[in-house]
Length: 270
Length: 275
Image (cartoon, rainbow over all chains, first blue to last red; front, side, top):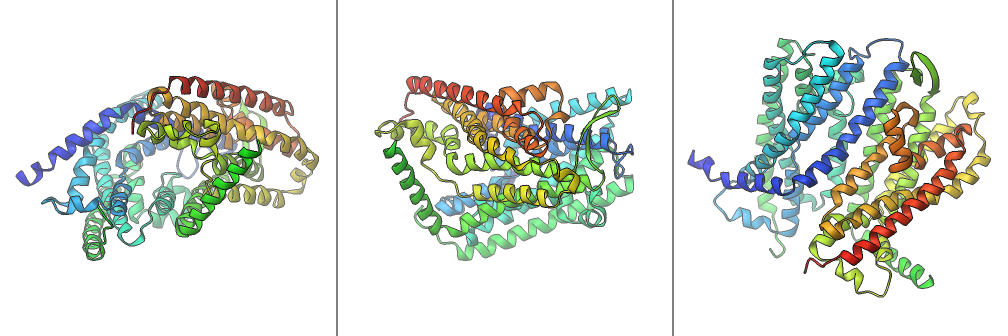
């Protein structure tokens, strides 16, 4: 316990940082959620254009829920460790972290958890409430399923863990690449597409089926499909186990990359 | 005026030198922007593989329809004014995010040039070539692969008025960025407000008719990004709504004056954050 306890100040710092900049956060959020509303109208026109009620097993209402819940889970599981670490590596301040008796990744994790607590409080309730009201109006009955919601939360925690270690490994690449900004954009675009954040993997046919097994689907597609109740209990069990496996794999990879990187680190000034 | 043109040339040259120093950064940034667009276009392609054309329906009656090529054309066209603004005037983003908050704005006030012009032209953002490249390729591709009966509606003479309006469309982007960046003179940081307003341009990439009236009004008159994309594009394609070109000029000039006013008032209210 004392081992964990020493990281709590980082969480407190993260919370304080987020509270200070909450107005910025809200404006940023409003800007980002604009994309959901654009797609809300685009999908409406798409379903109007189709002779069928459903496309690849998705009705229009499913699609709306998918849009907003995948936005929500994308936001909550987002981790920007790669950028923060990259910056510290490039300007050399990373040495300050290395000479202290704390774990490199744990500081980032606990600090980000602080941020997450605040963003969770700010956006989880409004978005899920909005989605549930929408579903209530469309279906005439409450669709919220508490066990599913809990599984969804658990799956999001796993997704965050995978994302965290994935980004950490990626951030350590700054030790080698010395350039992160451009590659960060590339990574974002590729991950968005492969994780089903832009369009459900079900729309991609056989390719989408294969993608379900890759780590990217664990980041976004799995929690969202659980929330929507489109996975059977067996599928839930299978895909959540897959999430755990990917979490372990990425945690190990990040340790390995860090070890290799430490050998090569050259700090110019500090 | 000549002094300003010369200054602009020097700034651009400086940035190109920087570019030669960090070739990989530039390449990665440009590839990144191309990939972001590629993912969106792939998504559009997947959507359109399920439907013959995008239709606009009211009470079950089809009022308008756009083929995949037309949607691609509108989408590609939207990237051009956006890309030009990004290329030339990207520096405005920094204002609201850190320049004013850090006290770095003093530099712009102590030089014998107009502060707005200085901020505007100081940086030449080559990443924007990614957006511009994708936009031009999409427009060209959508025209060449168009079914003959749709291509027959295009009258290339319409490019002349659109070319005249294009600078005004670019100015819509620049004015919105200027006005929101200037809020930072009072609040120290306003980058997130700029971001929020700027993101409304996402609506511009698709036919404006598919939105409800509230959204349509906002993107035509308040944050008029539809005037930079859908309206000129559909005018080229079909000769629809020529009035929108006049609206573009009018709204753009009004926004420009408003943003200048905010900037001037802001500078008067500005207190340095120290250094």
